[in-house]
Length: 415
Image (cartoon, rainbow, N blue to C red; front, side, top):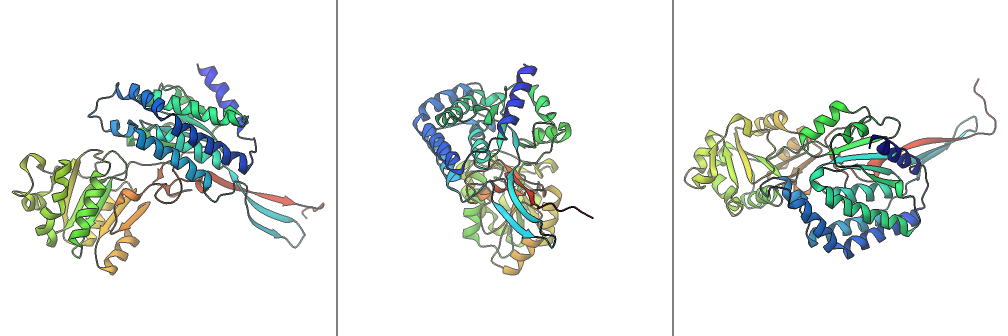
């Protein structure tokens, strides 16, 4: 198996040197979208094989599950990626030096992009479409819990490539067993960058064991601060959406921070959460404000470990603060630097929060659920980068490129 993986790696690296025209890349992605839409029932059938092996109470279950609506959304995202205004080998800058050397700064693909991910079969399509559109070959390492789902998507990708007689080695889906990860993380002559997408445990493992460059897509420990000047009606909508729209995603709300002078409005703020039977872990002050208003079966006194926790379920903690600086201090202590938000009608407070919050996406009066490549107009995403080099936030087409300098001479030599 190890020798087979090595051969596949080499073939993928070789494919990455092929230059495919913009037109063919476009047609291939449109074909892929059509195949996904046409074969949605086959995808659902394969997905059910994975779902049958997972406990429905597992937070990963929702991430894994595919239905017709989700499959058609995946197909739609492929079309969006295909239609984005983007040129893989665009000349970004050109100039002529005093010695008549002509310089051009040209955008180029990274080469081979590897993605390691858990229980998210849509990532198979998202990563391929973004990599292929930007001229990159890709190596995919999905989790064993999504094996059948990933395999059917992989077969459709290869069918789309074959439609235009393209090298099938543009993409390689690795075996699902975990031991194969070590081969990938040590492929120093093959992989130009690795992007892990999943739990903090997975990301930590990749960072600690990789000998290849890594872009971290950290776990989402997400806060929303309801300021002393926050609007109650907006707050109810935003908090409920951020928490319950999809609890298993990384941009879902984990901790509500509330100004102590607004504790009397806390029962109203969280009232919509009752529909989702959200469990609340409240500090002493917010617990007292909710006691008698929120069901005892869903209300608990928070422990230290309930802050800085990515719940990925219908659970949320509440922290009371005296002012915006205490809110910022709490966020700095516990944030994963993914997405943070403030709800306020005071412009100065909003700008104060924006300038002092260190996160990939910082919101004013909006749900953190928007931190997503598709929502940001990128078509799709490889993941959400929580680091600062070389990309931050949703990883789209531009983040999958670098550049090189083209130098045209007429015989010049340097003195």
